[in-house]
Image (cartoon, helix red, strand yellow):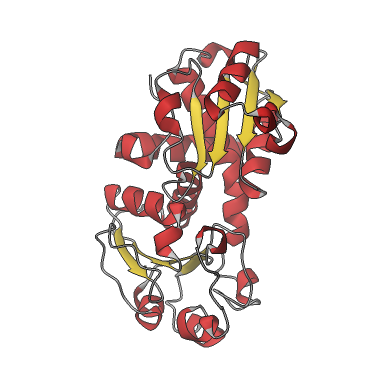
Length: 301
């Protein structure tokens, strides 16, 4: 049975099923009529991902086991593996993990007997963020195949860029990248274009912040918006139907003009709302796949 670790593991059929499931969850209230415990193990700071998982779990009727690394036995030398094994031992039915290491799941995946959901792994992947981004595009256009998506920003250090590029290509989207010098990731084999080209050709402009916490040296952002970001003038060059996405947190005035965040074509806050239902769908998916729940205990309120 699979953990929910990487977009690489998901077939296009499974992705579409999850998108449809999340949409259904938005339209009806479902709950799980069985006591289940979800362990939210966040070793990096988080607002949207952690809180939307919490809301998703509570909407499904799950008990939330919260965790704060700074107040845990990790301060006494306990490893990530033993921390997760502890939650497994005390009755957690699923573990949602965010950690700064790229490959933290390597040891856990074959040795933990409850499903693991990757809520962010270093610079490697962020599959649940990718899924809510896909949901937002899917709901906007009714499909993903053939949609031109330009991912713009600190590609080199972004786990969101990597997960989205993998999944978008799998679903038939046309993917481009756009980055300031030094922010490119040559491991991603997609064409690079300029920001001025990006705004003219895109159906979806997916902006990323500069990942300062992953840089060896902090870069000066003075002039970044004018040179590489979405200014008001560039926004005017976008197609009428084109939309703006951003995984957030948004650094207003750096990668995007502060006012554009709430323009009509922005779907940034819709992404956040979609995150709750997408994560509900993912929780139901993994719990069902592991045989922890079945259709008989998923009821409409």
